[in-house]
Amino acid sequence: MIINKIILKNFRCFENFSINLNSKNIIIGDNGKGKTSIIESIYLCSNYRTINSKTKNIDLLKNKKIKAIIQIDTENKNILEINSNKSIIINGFKSQVIDLVNSVKCVFYLENESYIFFSKPTLRRKFFDQLIFNIDSNYLYLLNNYFRILKNRNSILKSKSNDCLDIWTDYFVDINNKISNKKNNYITELEIYIKYISKIVLGKDINIKIEVKNKLYKREILIKELNIGSTLFGHHLTDYDIYIDGNNIFNLSSNGQKKLYLIIIKLAHLELSNSKYQLTQPIVIDDLSSDLDKNIINKIYSYLSNIKNQVLITNIENIHSDTFSVTNINKN
Image (cartoon, rainbow, N blue to C red; front, side, top):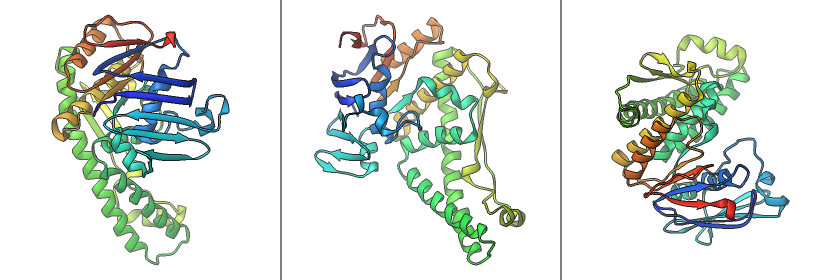
């Protein structure tokens, strides 16, 4: 997929903005000029949610206008209208969420993603869930069914009744096993590509291990579940630990190291997406240069210059490159 053009109307800081994109793109501009808003417009269409989960629709509308429009032109015109409620229009027809996100699938590195190193397990789960869904649309259906079954099972537990509990437990164990299998298979594949990308970017081999910490079903926890009225196993309680050469990555003190390994994870995911799933998605990177040394930045640019995927990077400073087209939004 290639994004040919982005048109924004009354979105964030833009009243009427458009940008044509090439295969390799750098958008430069001072802070507050709208670089991240451009990223968020693509993110909204690719994920049908804002970068910050606390952002309300009214926050997206310039000067609290009635409606904002995001148009992402790929092979089709993908239009997202934002008002008090989101509605999706693709090629002039109202569509489902899954149709939109499948039409504008991208891989993102966002500047604030280092939160996964010090956040609650919920955010780490969302981080990896989003990566898996990015290459496997059926994963979203599994998650939706999972949380529907979880809600029903919790209702029975809260009622202190054993009626139908065994049936709902069987449903829940079954769908949780399907989700766990997808997670474990994805992580196994991702580790291989992380080693590959690390060799390119870092110039050395690293020993990477991503541990999926699942809460497994045990019959003996049923009494405790009935006492508290809540399910005590399953995907909604999963956490992740990442080890680099035996050291837990969550303990790294340097923001640069955290950012570097996150970018490596995203590039590895992109390579997996290309090699196994033939998706050839654009990669969108917000503020590449901050916290990274120039040698690493140059290696990342060199790698991105040679991949077949479309690349969109935002940066404060201009990067002189024969491969990348530069757009300065300070001039808009």
